[in-house]
Image 1 (cartoon, helix red, strand yellow):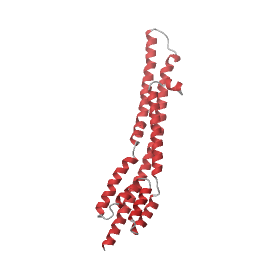
Image 2 (cartoon, rainbow, N blue to C red):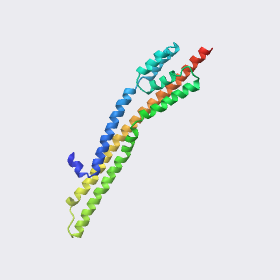
Image 3 (cartoon, rainbow, N blue to C red):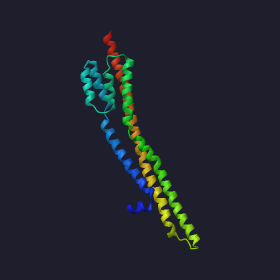
Image 4 (tube, one colour):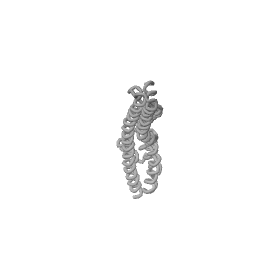
Length: 210
């Protein structure tokens, strides 16, 4: 491993650093997203029962006990349950705007690594080829024959840098797309739960007004 890093040139250290950073981000995001995952439909069914029984405090307490963005935006709506439908909707939307950046936290870092890792590899390839041509030039100036061993150092650097860059970029890009799909699922659950909550609170308010 250490031998390959040395033969791959200075770009290998940046690629290695990128891989460590990407791995850390993936582990952190997978852990936190899994912790926040709940059965949104089951949660909303239980909240609906509590709200229909006018158990507002119990519904808020249930939101406090439940992790994840769905519970947070539902709580925001319940806290203004006695207001008009537009006001409830606004409160839920404001809460959602705070939750989405938390779900997408560090994802731009992964996207950046997935894009720059091949470029770092390409840069390493270029520097490796430059070294190979420098050897050819030096041999030519000395009127000495060029043999494959003279060029091996530069070619090693070029090929290893390319391999390392792609080896980091491909799994990082796959992980990024997976995490984005998980965030999209959360957003869908949030939107569906928010719509259900607004309708429930509005119908409940209309019933009491009648």
